[in-house]
Length: 202
Ligand code: ADP
Image 1 (cartoon, rainbow, N blue to C red):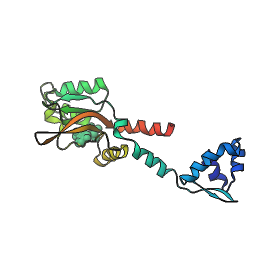
Image 2: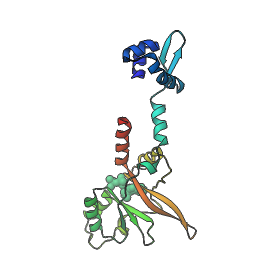
Image 3: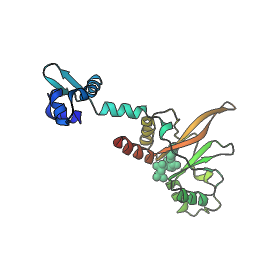
Image 4: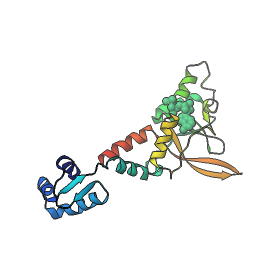
């Protein structure tokens, strides 16, 4: 409210701001000090406060870059490579998701199937009761992943740049001189829609 008032009436003194908010000057002092210190307002002696025009992007982008994937990740739905395409489609409906993550015999990430991957097979002549998802999935090493310590921004950027709906959140484990990926969560377009709403409501 202070920023809105200053934007509208600049230059404006702290007394005038206080008046508009029905507050005392001393009640406003800490807020004005913070707003000046972080560069949103500029105080000119004997003139009053000005709006510097420096919010909102800087503050909002800093906030988003501070949010880690670990704090926003959701529970992934994971199936194994030998699950039939039919069962994968049923799982998609029952769990109300758009992407299923797939593990190999070793329990690590081996691929994923999206709803269109499954649709493509289902409209063909394949016997989807017999065909395993391992045949139709997008396979490692072509899977775009994120780690829990990456920022929400980095994850969202990957989703946009690679034009996919979901990313598995993984811990990288080295086994037999090979990097393997343990699935610990997922981030999807819905994750970021929810985050967007939360950021506005805070
Ligand atoms: P859909 O097109 O089914 O709505 P996507 O846009 O996520 O869903 O998927 C498009 C294609 O990209 C599919 O073939 C899918 O297997 C693949 N894909 C989806 N997510 C990833 C990912 N994280 N890494 C690599 N490929 C992916």
